[in-house]
View 1 (tube, rainbow, N blue to C red):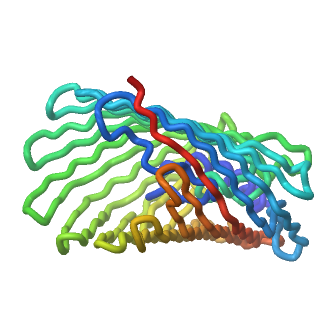
View 2 (view 1 turned 180 degrees about the horizontal axis):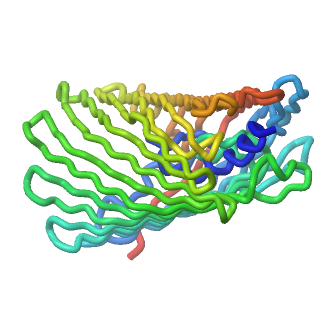
Length: 403
């Protein structure tokens, strides 16, 4: 009973820890039109609409052995983006709404929304102010990047605000400071037990990163971040992460990055303070025909289990290969493992995978075949959830210069 109580309370804590992820995961099949940022001074408006036909083999996100239900769905995705580039200012706003229409299970028809606003202002030659607000509302928890949350057919809303300053202190030194606020809310659903996903919560905190170029190929630095989070409006925890970092250019198109340090977490519920090593490493390369990246991160996170305390590991990889001027293939893969610090708690493993083949028919139409899959094991009865989707989408868009 104790383990179950901690398990169900900790699920929502993972949503608040989303900002600790090393990278976002491109899971949604209905991707946006490409190249919508303004590349020349002035305003650019890009309207877009996409239509996708998808086969979903587990629309209810049921656990293994519970009888998965499959169906076809049509996704209609109108989108609009507006960008501005000036002498000191850049601004970009993007909105996308997807109507999910199922062929047989029309009671599951839903509306997915994503929006983002980016603003940058160059205060002086070395100092730039930036701010970003993003919003996502999805009918399922596997379509939003929330580490440690169980995959469920339950609506989730995720708000993320970030702001800060980038300052070039001299020719070799760059300082970045930021403030972050996030809120996660799950929908009420009478069919979902109340102890499965709680009402969400919010978190805020600050971070600083210093990078110094000590040689043409070598950079050294450090980063520090601290977060305070409130879960279910009364359970709080604080996290600090500190790392020394290195950035080394192995070759002209091959770069290695890494960091090592420690994570510290304290919770108000149990007055327990824990510390653990933290480190990350990444390698990325590019060439005439392919660009790729791989990365690994281990840190002490508020996540899934006792007091929200978990040691989290993440592995990510991605590749993009333009085969011709019009045809390209891409893929991404990510694994997250949350290992409990208390033996009586349960761990969680989540896997995301996506691949696509994209063809630019002309300047305004792109055709894409895609496959996405998610796999999760929460190490309890019925906790293995697998979902695969495959389909074709057509996206049409046109850049319009606003005079």
